[in-house]
Image (cartoon, rainbow over all chains, first blue to last red; front, side, top):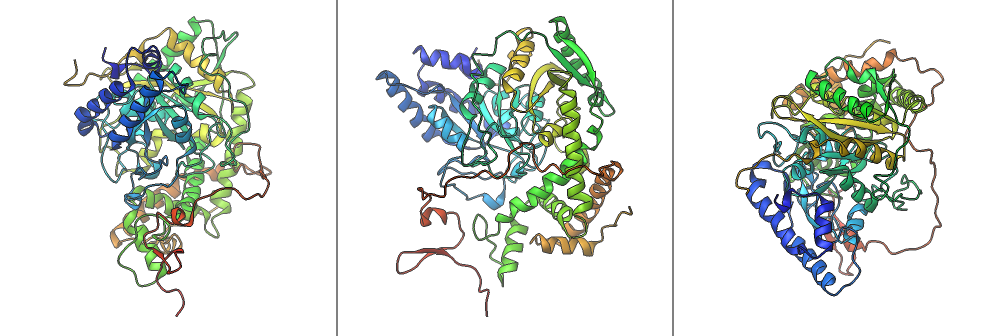
Length: 490
Length: 103
């Protein structure tokens, strides 16, 4: 198997034992990107020179037997809404087309300190708003398993980069499912840590009470490796929990003991593709065969989650995106006669359709006369959704179900129907509303050969147990070892 | 509770509040789409929420304080690096320019 198809854990072993050099590994990924990115569209920007320089520095330090970080020499891709000092950070928006941050996001600083090699920035739905990556102002991204299909979104570039073996691991962000859903649709592992587990400092804000940075990897071990590096307290994000970070990777194969898996009937209702349901039920049976107890649980407010989410997320987005005013950041319109028209025209020219739609909906939800009926009502329903989960977790360790109601859909199919697009997130959004940890792991393929994901949700800050439970499934299945074929490879 | 129907004029006024210039075509399309979304989210009205406290975010943390002590931060030059019209005074101080606000 080519090095580009290996997991991070395998590659780190080879690097640590001196069997490969970081610079050669990085070059192999850059070559693969050179051959395949034009087709996949996973990356918006590749920093070849910077990556090779970082890799060379790791090799030199290793040769001198200097201490190195836990990810020394490992290439990684970053969603282009994570600030990288001196490198483009566009959020796939025209309004930030020329933006180069003057500082690194906290997670980027952590990766640099761990001696990872930053390959480049991946495509996304503009400002992470979307479920197919088709809302990027710059390019589409294709699903490596079927080039006519979407990769999911909004972290579609990061998911396609890992699935397509153009990076061994990647970071994304998840506001309503934007790590887990593309992971499911591209056949990789997507971890959304709990609200507060990872600092969002330097993540371009979308919905501040929902946003979290997550990982896209080939397997659960790699997710644990990365989480260990990026998690932990950071005073620059006041919502970041001041809690110790467990040794996720070393604890992965520790015995789980009695395991009860909650199966909410609300996650197996109308709109669920029968092939997805079959694969997910099969995964639940696998757990049962391993000794787990399956228990039906109820999340009665699930049917209101999507509506609550689209009010809370858009209200927060309309406020967060007020900073793009043509003055402090990004694009400034040439056509203006006063300050108000400078704002309105810069924003009108700089934002795409979905971003405008959400700013408008958020402005509506917060506007005088409607705030109580929409925004406040949504926050009350949000508490009821959280209470449903608190009650369910009294009876079970994790909640399991499908990550996405369907497999990857054809490019273009839902672009003109925002509500149909929003339904792609129906099973993932409640974890963001309730601040839970969630993971999607590969659990099969449709008859058309498209990947299916199993979603596991657990109580806030319980990633250690969540990862162990996900790893248990992975240890007896081989879905995570499959790679899509690509032309031109050995 | 009766559902307000969104008119193009209301959407235009929201666009003004949001400082968003929209073409006539965008306004027409958005009016239709927002109406459909607002109709969908009205689903929430059927949930009884009397006495339920709003949940603004999921963590039980409020006001996080720190000592108010000087610490290194971005230079004025860096802090203004992303502005579209950054200028510098004869004394070497950075600022950005906007259209005149006062006559």
